[in-house]
Length: 323
Length: 122
Image: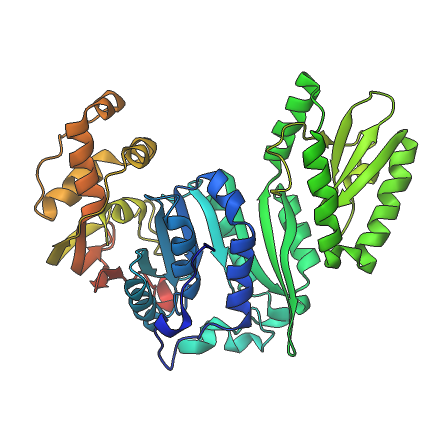
Protein backbone atom coordinates (compact mmCIF):
# COMPACT_ATOMS: atom_id res chain seq x y z
CA UNK A 1 0.00 0.00 0.00
CA UNK A 2 1.40 3.35 -0.94
CA UNK A 3 1.78 5.87 1.87
CA UNK A 4 -1.14 8.15 2.45
CA UNK A 5 -1.21 11.86 1.80
CA UNK A 6 -3.97 14.34 2.49
CA UNK A 7 -6.99 14.08 0.21
CA UNK A 8 -7.90 17.19 -1.69
CA UNK A 9 -11.61 16.67 -1.04
CA UNK A 10 -10.90 16.75 2.69
CA UNK A 11 -8.76 19.87 2.56
CA UNK A 12 -10.73 22.78 3.95
CA UNK A 13 -10.77 26.19 2.29
CA UNK A 14 -11.38 29.88 2.83
CA UNK A 15 -11.31 32.76 0.33
CA UNK A 16 -8.27 34.23 2.12
CA UNK A 17 -6.28 30.99 2.26
CA UNK A 18 -4.06 29.59 -0.46
CA UNK A 19 -5.41 26.32 -1.82
CA UNK A 20 -3.10 23.38 -2.55
CA UNK A 21 -1.54 23.91 -5.94
CA UNK A 22 1.40 22.66 -8.02
CA UNK A 23 3.93 23.91 -5.49
CA UNK A 24 2.15 22.18 -2.58
CA UNK A 25 1.94 18.95 -4.59
CA UNK A 26 5.61 19.16 -5.51
CA UNK A 27 6.55 19.63 -1.86
CA UNK A 28 4.47 16.65 -0.76
CA UNK A 29 5.92 14.60 -3.61
CA UNK A 30 9.39 15.52 -2.39
CA UNK A 31 8.52 14.39 1.14
CA UNK A 32 7.08 11.16 -0.27
CA UNK A 33 10.18 10.60 -2.37
CA UNK A 34 12.31 11.05 0.74
CA UNK A 35 9.89 9.30 3.10
CA UNK A 36 12.00 6.21 3.70
CA UNK A 37 14.91 8.42 4.66
CA UNK A 38 12.72 10.48 6.96
CA UNK A 39 11.49 7.30 8.64
CA UNK A 40 15.08 6.14 9.18
CA UNK A 41 15.85 9.59 10.47
CA UNK A 42 13.31 9.18 13.32
CA UNK A 43 12.32 12.82 13.67
CA UNK A 44 10.73 13.84 16.97
CA UNK A 45 9.77 17.40 16.15
CA UNK A 46 8.55 18.55 12.75
CA UNK A 47 7.68 22.11 11.85
CA UNK A 48 5.92 23.60 8.87
CA UNK A 49 6.29 27.33 8.38
CA UNK A 50 3.40 28.80 6.40
CA UNK A 51 0.95 25.90 6.56
CA UNK A 52 -1.82 27.59 4.53
CA UNK A 53 -4.59 25.06 3.90
CA UNK A 54 -2.84 22.40 5.98
CA UNK A 55 -2.40 20.08 3.00
CA UNK A 56 1.34 19.65 3.53
CA UNK A 57 1.45 19.21 7.31
CA UNK A 58 -1.52 16.81 7.16
CA UNK A 59 0.25 14.84 4.44
CA UNK A 60 3.48 14.71 6.42
CA UNK A 61 1.64 13.52 9.53
CA UNK A 62 -0.20 10.89 7.48
CA UNK A 63 2.83 9.56 5.65
CA UNK A 64 4.89 9.24 8.85
CA UNK A 65 2.08 8.47 11.25
CA UNK A 66 1.82 4.71 10.91
CA UNK A 67 5.50 3.98 11.38
CA UNK A 68 6.38 6.91 13.60
CA UNK A 69 3.74 7.51 16.23
CA UNK A 70 4.48 10.21 18.77
CA UNK A 71 6.08 12.73 16.43
CA UNK A 72 5.22 16.26 17.54
CA UNK A 73 4.10 18.50 14.70
CA UNK A 74 4.13 22.29 14.81
CA UNK A 75 2.68 24.47 12.08
CA UNK A 76 2.73 28.25 11.85
CA UNK A 77 1.20 30.80 9.53
CA UNK A 78 1.02 34.57 9.58
CA UNK A 79 -2.58 34.41 8.35
CA UNK A 80 -5.08 33.56 11.14
CA UNK A 81 -7.58 32.20 8.60
CA UNK A 82 -4.97 29.71 7.41
CA UNK A 83 -4.65 28.19 10.87
CA UNK A 84 -8.38 27.68 11.21
CA UNK A 85 -8.44 26.02 7.78
CA UNK A 86 -5.43 23.90 8.71
CA UNK A 87 -7.20 22.79 11.89
CA UNK A 88 -10.20 21.64 9.81
CA UNK A 89 -7.95 19.86 7.33
CA UNK A 90 -6.11 18.06 10.13
CA UNK A 91 -9.36 17.07 11.85
CA UNK A 92 -10.78 15.74 8.58
CA UNK A 93 -7.75 13.45 8.29
CA UNK A 94 -7.73 12.50 11.98
CA UNK A 95 -4.20 13.80 12.50
CA UNK A 96 -2.96 16.50 14.82
CA UNK A 97 -0.49 19.36 14.93
CA UNK A 98 0.08 22.31 17.20
CA UNK A 99 -0.93 25.46 15.35
CA UNK A 100 0.36 28.93 16.05
CA UNK A 101 -0.25 32.25 14.38
CA UNK A 102 3.09 33.99 14.03
CA UNK A 103 5.52 35.54 11.60
CA UNK A 104 7.72 32.61 10.45
CA UNK A 105 8.53 31.11 13.88
CA UNK A 106 9.04 34.25 15.94
CA UNK A 107 7.61 32.92 19.22
CA UNK A 108 9.53 29.64 18.98
CA UNK A 109 12.99 30.82 18.08
CA UNK A 110 14.34 31.03 21.60
CA UNK A 111 13.10 27.82 23.16
CA UNK A 112 12.86 25.57 20.13
CA UNK A 113 16.37 26.38 18.89
CA UNK A 114 18.25 23.28 17.78
CA UNK A 115 15.29 20.96 18.26
CA UNK A 116 13.51 20.69 14.91
CA UNK A 117 14.36 17.52 12.98
CA UNK A 118 12.27 18.15 9.88
CA UNK A 119 11.24 21.59 8.70
CA UNK A 120 9.12 22.14 5.61
CA UNK A 121 8.48 25.47 3.96
CA UNK A 122 6.53 26.52 0.93
CA UNK A 123 7.41 30.19 1.20
CA UNK A 124 5.85 33.16 -0.56
CA UNK A 125 8.25 33.03 -3.49
CA UNK A 126 6.53 35.03 -6.21
CA UNK A 127 8.43 38.18 -7.25
CA UNK A 128 6.29 41.17 -6.33
CA UNK A 129 6.83 44.80 -5.44
CA UNK A 130 8.28 44.95 -1.94
CA UNK A 131 5.29 46.85 -0.56
CA UNK A 132 3.11 43.78 -1.16
CA UNK A 133 5.16 41.68 1.25
CA UNK A 134 3.61 41.13 4.67
CA UNK A 135 0.11 42.15 3.62
CA UNK A 136 -2.74 40.48 5.39
CA UNK A 137 -4.70 37.60 3.95
CA UNK A 138 -3.93 35.43 1.00
CA UNK A 139 -1.26 37.77 -0.43
CA UNK A 140 1.00 36.62 2.41
CA UNK A 141 1.01 33.20 0.75
CA UNK A 142 2.74 34.42 -2.37
CA UNK A 143 4.11 37.97 -2.13
CA UNK A 144 7.87 37.48 -2.07
CA UNK A 145 9.22 40.93 -2.88
CA UNK A 146 12.24 41.41 -5.10
CA UNK A 147 13.08 38.16 -6.90
CA UNK A 148 10.65 36.50 -4.50
CA UNK A 149 13.40 36.45 -1.91
CA UNK A 150 12.23 38.85 0.83
CA UNK A 151 10.62 36.21 3.01
CA UNK A 152 12.87 33.32 1.97
CA UNK A 153 15.92 35.30 3.10
CA UNK A 154 14.31 35.81 6.49
CA UNK A 155 13.39 32.14 6.79
CA UNK A 156 16.89 30.77 6.17
CA UNK A 157 18.51 32.08 9.38
CA UNK A 158 15.45 30.96 11.36
CA UNK A 159 15.79 27.47 9.90
CA UNK A 160 19.47 27.47 10.82
CA UNK A 161 18.57 28.39 14.38
CA UNK A 162 15.74 25.91 14.81
CA UNK A 163 17.14 22.83 13.09
CA UNK A 164 18.70 20.15 15.26
CA UNK A 165 22.14 18.83 14.44
CA UNK A 166 20.51 16.17 12.32
CA UNK A 167 17.77 18.50 11.08
CA UNK A 168 16.56 18.62 7.51
CA UNK A 169 14.90 21.51 5.73
CA UNK A 170 12.72 21.04 2.66
CA UNK A 171 11.93 24.24 0.82
CA UNK A 172 10.07 25.16 -2.36
CA UNK A 173 11.85 27.61 -4.62
CA UNK A 174 11.25 29.09 -8.00
CA UNK A 175 13.97 29.46 -10.62
CA UNK A 176 13.53 33.23 -10.33
CA UNK A 177 14.48 32.99 -6.63
CA UNK A 178 17.96 31.94 -7.75
CA UNK A 179 18.00 28.62 -5.87
CA UNK A 180 21.69 28.17 -6.54
CA UNK A 181 22.43 31.34 -4.65
CA UNK A 182 20.16 30.12 -1.82
CA UNK A 183 22.17 26.90 -1.68
CA UNK A 184 25.34 28.95 -1.56
CA UNK A 185 24.01 31.07 1.30
CA UNK A 186 23.13 27.90 3.19
CA UNK A 187 26.51 26.40 2.36
CA UNK A 188 28.09 29.33 4.15
CA UNK A 189 26.02 28.41 7.18
CA UNK A 190 27.36 24.86 6.91
CA UNK A 191 24.58 23.17 4.96
CA UNK A 192 24.77 20.82 2.04
CA UNK A 193 21.81 20.65 -0.29
CA UNK A 194 20.21 18.71 -3.05
CA UNK A 195 17.20 18.99 -5.27
CA UNK A 196 14.60 16.39 -4.36
CA UNK A 197 11.98 17.30 -6.93
CA UNK A 198 12.21 19.54 -9.94
CA UNK A 199 9.05 20.36 -11.79
CA UNK A 200 8.15 22.73 -14.57
CA UNK A 201 4.59 23.87 -14.96
CA UNK A 202 3.27 26.27 -17.55
CA UNK A 203 3.84 29.21 -15.26
CA UNK A 204 6.84 28.32 -13.23
CA UNK A 205 9.79 26.05 -12.69
CA UNK A 206 9.89 24.70 -9.16
CA UNK A 207 12.67 23.11 -7.18
CA UNK A 208 12.14 21.39 -3.87
CA UNK A 209 15.50 21.62 -2.15
CA UNK A 210 16.60 19.66 0.85
CA UNK A 211 19.22 21.12 3.19
CA UNK A 212 21.15 19.34 5.90
CA UNK A 213 24.08 20.20 8.07
CA UNK A 214 27.43 19.48 6.58
CA UNK A 215 28.82 18.33 9.93
CA UNK A 216 27.06 15.02 9.28
CA UNK A 217 29.22 14.64 6.26
CA UNK A 218 32.29 15.52 8.23
CA UNK A 219 31.40 12.92 10.84
CA UNK A 220 31.09 10.38 8.08
CA UNK A 221 34.43 11.52 6.84
CA UNK A 222 36.07 10.76 10.13
CA UNK A 223 34.50 7.37 10.15
CA UNK A 224 35.79 6.36 6.77
CA UNK A 225 39.21 7.66 7.57
CA UNK A 226 39.40 5.77 10.82
CA UNK A 227 37.67 2.58 9.82
CA UNK A 228 38.80 2.45 6.23
CA UNK A 229 35.61 0.79 5.13
CA UNK A 230 34.70 0.80 1.49
CA UNK A 231 31.37 1.61 -0.04
CA UNK A 232 29.30 -1.54 -0.39
CA UNK A 233 28.69 -2.50 -3.99
CA UNK A 234 24.93 -2.28 -3.61
CA UNK A 235 25.19 1.30 -2.49
CA UNK A 236 27.30 2.14 -5.45
CA UNK A 237 24.88 0.41 -7.78
CA UNK A 238 21.98 2.28 -6.35
CA UNK A 239 23.87 5.51 -6.81
CA UNK A 240 24.54 4.76 -10.42
CA UNK A 241 20.98 3.71 -11.10
CA UNK A 242 19.60 6.78 -9.38
CA UNK A 243 21.82 8.99 -11.35
CA UNK A 244 20.11 8.11 -14.60
CA UNK A 245 16.80 9.25 -13.13
CA UNK A 246 18.05 12.61 -12.10
CA UNK A 247 17.56 14.38 -15.36
CA UNK A 248 18.06 17.77 -13.82
CA UNK A 249 21.64 17.00 -13.10
CA UNK A 250 22.33 16.43 -16.74
CA UNK A 251 21.93 20.14 -17.15
CA UNK A 252 24.51 22.57 -18.23
CA UNK A 253 25.38 23.55 -14.72
CA UNK A 254 26.23 20.12 -13.43
CA UNK A 255 28.13 19.22 -16.57
CA UNK A 256 30.44 22.13 -16.11
CA UNK A 257 30.80 21.21 -12.49
CA UNK A 258 31.66 17.63 -13.26
CA UNK A 259 34.31 18.79 -15.62
CA UNK A 260 35.89 20.75 -12.83
CA UNK A 261 35.66 17.83 -10.45
CA UNK A 262 37.18 15.48 -13.01
CA UNK A 263 40.06 17.84 -13.55
CA UNK A 264 40.63 18.16 -9.85
CA UNK A 265 40.32 14.42 -9.36
CA UNK A 266 43.00 13.80 -11.96
CA UNK A 267 45.27 16.13 -10.08
CA UNK A 268 44.79 13.92 -7.03
CA UNK A 269 45.22 10.67 -8.98
CA UNK A 270 41.75 9.56 -8.17
CA UNK A 271 39.31 7.99 -10.52
CA UNK A 272 35.67 8.95 -10.63
CA UNK A 273 33.35 5.98 -10.80
CA UNK A 274 29.97 7.67 -10.57
CA UNK A 275 28.25 10.96 -10.12
CA UNK A 276 25.03 11.30 -8.28
CA UNK A 277 23.16 14.50 -7.67
CA UNK A 278 25.17 16.47 -5.19
CA UNK A 279 27.95 14.01 -4.64
CA UNK A 280 30.26 12.08 -6.85
CA UNK A 281 31.58 8.69 -6.07
CA UNK A 282 35.22 8.30 -6.83
CA UNK A 283 37.86 5.73 -6.31
CA UNK A 284 41.22 6.57 -5.00
CA UNK A 285 43.92 4.77 -6.85
CA UNK A 286 46.59 5.57 -4.36
CA UNK A 287 44.81 4.47 -1.23
CA UNK A 288 42.59 1.80 -2.81
CA UNK A 289 39.70 3.36 -1.00
CA UNK A 290 36.43 4.31 -2.52
CA UNK A 291 35.55 7.78 -1.47
CA UNK A 292 32.90 10.34 -2.13
CA UNK A 293 33.38 14.00 -2.78
CA UNK A 294 30.62 16.36 -1.90
CA UNK A 295 30.07 18.80 -4.70
CA UNK A 296 26.74 20.01 -3.47
CA UNK A 297 27.94 23.54 -3.12
CA UNK A 298 26.76 22.84 -6.45
CA UNK A 299 26.02 25.75 -7.89
CA UNK A 300 29.05 27.72 -7.14
CA UNK A 301 32.45 26.49 -6.24
CA UNK A 302 33.09 22.88 -5.58
CA UNK A 303 35.16 21.67 -2.77
CA UNK A 304 37.72 19.79 -4.75
CA UNK A 305 38.91 22.88 -6.44
CA UNK A 306 38.44 24.94 -3.35
CA UNK A 307 40.62 22.80 -1.13
CA UNK A 308 43.76 21.04 -2.21
CA UNK A 309 42.66 18.14 0.02
CA UNK A 310 39.31 16.83 -1.15
CA UNK A 311 36.78 16.11 1.55
CA UNK A 312 36.16 12.42 1.70
CA UNK A 313 33.19 10.80 3.23
CA UNK A 314 31.02 7.77 3.33
CA UNK A 315 31.86 4.18 3.87
CA UNK A 316 28.77 3.16 5.71
CA UNK A 317 25.63 2.14 3.98
CA UNK A 318 23.62 4.84 5.66
CA UNK A 319 25.35 7.80 4.14
CA UNK A 320 23.84 8.00 0.84
CA UNK A 321 21.35 7.88 -1.37
CA UNK A 322 19.60 9.64 1.48
CA UNK A 323 21.33 12.89 0.82
CA UNK B 1 -2.42 24.43 22.70
CA UNK B 2 -0.58 21.76 24.65
CA UNK B 3 1.73 22.57 27.52
CA UNK B 4 4.71 21.24 25.60
CA UNK B 5 4.03 24.01 23.10
CA UNK B 6 3.66 26.50 25.95
CA UNK B 7 7.06 25.39 27.23
CA UNK B 8 8.56 26.20 23.81
CA UNK B 9 6.87 29.58 23.31
CA UNK B 10 8.16 32.95 24.38
CA UNK B 11 7.21 36.55 23.88
CA UNK B 12 9.21 38.04 21.05
CA UNK B 13 8.33 41.69 21.55
CA UNK B 14 11.13 44.12 20.78
CA UNK B 15 13.05 45.00 23.90
CA UNK B 16 11.83 42.02 25.92
CA UNK B 17 14.87 40.29 27.38
CA UNK B 18 13.54 36.85 28.19
CA UNK B 19 9.81 36.69 27.54
CA UNK B 20 9.50 33.27 29.14
CA UNK B 21 7.42 31.68 30.52
CA UNK B 22 4.24 33.22 29.22
CA UNK B 23 1.66 33.50 31.97
CA UNK B 24 -1.57 31.69 31.18
CA UNK B 25 -5.09 33.03 31.49
CA UNK B 26 -7.63 30.25 31.26
CA UNK B 27 -11.13 30.42 29.83
CA UNK B 28 -11.43 26.82 28.72
CA UNK B 29 -9.31 23.70 29.06
CA UNK B 30 -9.93 20.50 27.14
CA UNK B 31 -8.33 17.09 27.52
CA UNK B 32 -7.62 14.81 24.58
CA UNK B 33 -6.10 11.38 25.03
CA UNK B 34 -3.04 10.54 23.01
CA UNK B 35 -0.95 7.37 22.88
CA UNK B 36 1.68 7.10 25.60
CA UNK B 37 5.15 7.43 24.12
CA UNK B 38 7.86 7.19 26.82
CA UNK B 39 10.69 7.71 24.29
CA UNK B 40 9.36 11.10 23.34
CA UNK B 41 9.12 12.10 27.00
CA UNK B 42 12.63 10.91 27.81
CA UNK B 43 14.00 12.81 24.85
CA UNK B 44 12.18 16.01 25.59
CA UNK B 45 12.68 16.03 29.34
CA UNK B 46 16.14 17.67 29.22
CA UNK B 47 14.72 20.47 27.05
CA UNK B 48 11.90 21.35 29.42
CA UNK B 49 11.82 24.29 31.77
CA UNK B 50 10.41 22.29 34.63
CA UNK B 51 9.12 25.08 36.82
CA UNK B 52 7.32 26.68 33.89
CA UNK B 53 5.64 23.35 33.17
CA UNK B 54 4.59 22.75 36.77
CA UNK B 55 3.15 26.25 37.04
CA UNK B 56 1.37 26.01 33.69
CA UNK B 57 -0.13 22.62 34.56
CA UNK B 58 -1.32 23.97 37.88
CA UNK B 59 -2.93 26.96 36.16
CA UNK B 60 -4.81 24.50 33.97
CA UNK B 61 -5.91 22.53 37.02
CA UNK B 62 -3.43 19.66 37.00
CA UNK B 63 -1.46 19.46 40.24
CA UNK B 64 0.15 16.01 40.08
CA UNK B 65 3.59 17.07 38.84
CA UNK B 66 6.33 17.20 41.48
CA UNK B 67 7.91 20.58 42.25
CA UNK B 68 11.32 19.30 41.27
CA UNK B 69 12.30 16.66 38.78
CA UNK B 70 15.52 15.08 37.61
CA UNK B 71 16.32 12.55 34.95
CA UNK B 72 16.39 9.62 37.39
CA UNK B 73 12.62 9.99 37.67
CA UNK B 74 12.30 8.98 34.01
CA UNK B 75 12.70 5.39 35.23
CA UNK B 76 9.33 5.61 36.91
CA UNK B 77 6.32 4.81 34.76
CA UNK B 78 4.09 6.66 37.16
CA UNK B 79 6.13 9.83 36.68
CA UNK B 80 6.18 9.38 32.91
CA UNK B 81 2.39 8.97 32.82
CA UNK B 82 1.96 12.22 34.71
CA UNK B 83 4.43 14.00 32.46
CA UNK B 84 2.67 12.59 29.40
CA UNK B 85 -0.67 13.89 30.61
CA UNK B 86 0.66 17.33 31.51
CA UNK B 87 2.67 17.84 28.33
CA UNK B 88 0.44 16.30 25.70
CA UNK B 89 -3.12 15.75 26.86
CA UNK B 90 -4.17 19.02 28.49
CA UNK B 91 -4.98 21.78 26.03
CA UNK B 92 -5.58 25.45 26.59
CA UNK B 93 -8.52 25.81 24.22
CA UNK B 94 -9.59 29.38 25.03
CA UNK B 95 -7.70 31.98 26.99
CA UNK B 96 -4.58 34.06 26.63
CA UNK B 97 -0.82 34.00 27.04
CA UNK B 98 0.64 36.99 28.81
CA UNK B 99 4.14 38.36 28.26
CA UNK B 100 5.87 38.21 31.67
CA UNK B 101 7.68 41.49 31.08
CA UNK B 102 5.22 43.76 29.31
CA UNK B 103 1.87 42.25 30.25
CA UNK B 104 0.90 42.15 26.57
CA UNK B 105 -1.76 39.51 25.98
CA UNK B 106 -1.65 37.01 23.15
CA UNK B 107 -5.11 35.52 22.68
CA UNK B 108 -5.66 31.76 22.35
CA UNK B 109 -8.77 30.83 20.37
CA UNK B 110 -9.75 27.31 19.43
CA UNK B 111 -6.42 26.17 20.81
CA UNK B 112 -4.43 28.45 18.48
CA UNK B 113 -2.26 31.11 20.11
CA UNK B 114 -1.98 34.32 18.13
CA UNK B 115 1.59 35.51 18.63
CA UNK B 116 1.50 38.14 15.88
CA UNK B 117 3.13 41.38 16.93
CA UNK B 118 1.98 44.90 16.17
CA UNK B 119 4.26 47.01 13.99
CA UNK B 120 5.65 48.93 16.97
CA UNK B 121 6.52 45.69 18.76
CA UNK B 122 8.75 44.26 16.05
